[in-house]
Image (cartoon, rainbow, N blue to C red):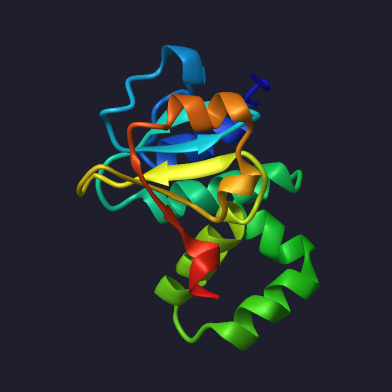
Length: 141
């Protein structure tokens, strides 16, 4: 798992998210956001999109989603073109996170795992998540 800096830790505090737990040690009955590089982040109800946006920023080398949008004018323009509200912005960026390799999220509602595509998960990840009903968002496109 990757090291979390102090600045990243403050972003986690803002999202009310747990420290990451390795996939092999995680309690998958709880709601979570998963990223292969960091592990499972347990997420309180209503914070999945915020955590997904935070992780998208981290994967692009920024400590927060604000820093990402300030420093990536192409992404900022894309977000402005495709969304009309702050809530829409977070939803759009959360979906962008799920398009990345090795990412998934489990809601606090039901026992479904949301991924962009099963192709984005490794054999080990698919095995760990096999008991979930899988919802692939790329099938909506």
